[in-house]
Image (cartoon, rainbow, N blue to C red; front, top):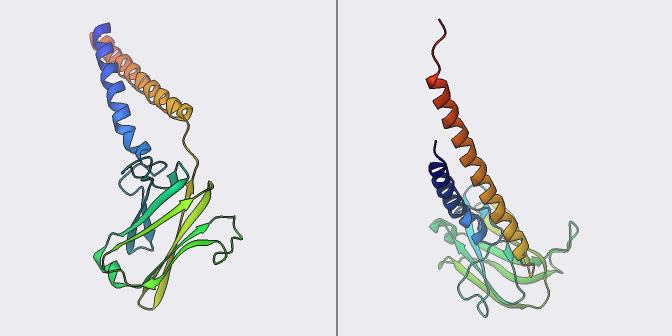
Length: 197
């Protein structure tokens, strides 16, 4: 395999790997797939939670890591239409650890009610960074399903961390290209050897 062909192979891999990883970083700490900002409520329902910083970031969407303090809009969208027929309660609570007093540390509370629009907004000013969690409770016939979704506010991802991730991706691309180059050359050498009598 010629060096020029090897370089082309590496360039292709190095180009594709960052593209494949963009979604993993776009939601500020989400899981990297289409469900990164979804709250799973039992096995039946899902709710999409999004954080927005209208004053500084425009329409950019964050998930479980909102990088700045200040005015923040948190939106909850019900994915399944039949979830809108059930009474739902939503709390946003300051997370002080395992013994957090939920009522005493609730900063937003939407009591049980049916949300026919399927969307709920919370617009507030967060002056200090911290850890929080949303507590979603759904009355589903004879049972109440409760789900907790942790998130942070005011902990930005540093440029250093992002750079390290980029170099890791490029390094993996180089390793993959070298492995392909070595394998092709091994196959070529083996095919040129005469069979033993």
